[in-house]
Figure 1 (cartoon, rainbow, N blue to C red):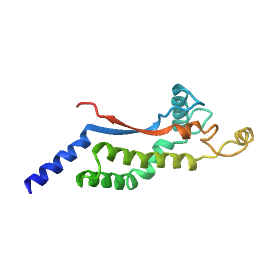
Figure 2: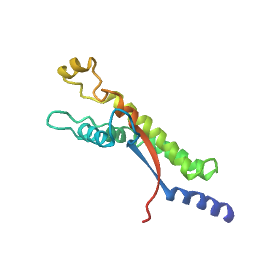
Figure 3: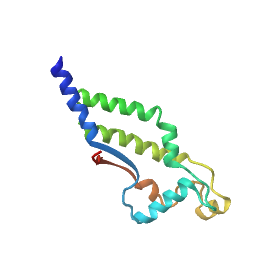
Figure 4: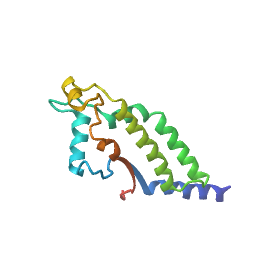
Length: 146
């Protein structure tokens, strides 16, 4: 029994080595990384002319307490049962988070101003070129030493 617990402890320690980051991090031809940062900041927090359309914080609010906790528990279970490495567990959680952030982009409000709808030809608040949507991705990173 001690040997089994020691092995589980060792596998769980793998989770301390990494972390997952999700956001507008994938390169897209429509925007430079600096432009993407501005697009995220302006839409996440709003400006005097653009209302806040929080697709990152909104996704955390909608999914953090249930969906992400569930997938995280499943990932930890996979590590304990030797079905996943720590890195693979973070990829699994990150994939779910990416999916949920993209879904939030699809449903976020408020609606565009009528002048914006006329200019774009549709009412999709966070979709103009599609670059922001396609830039949403995950990175499994080595956790910095504490």
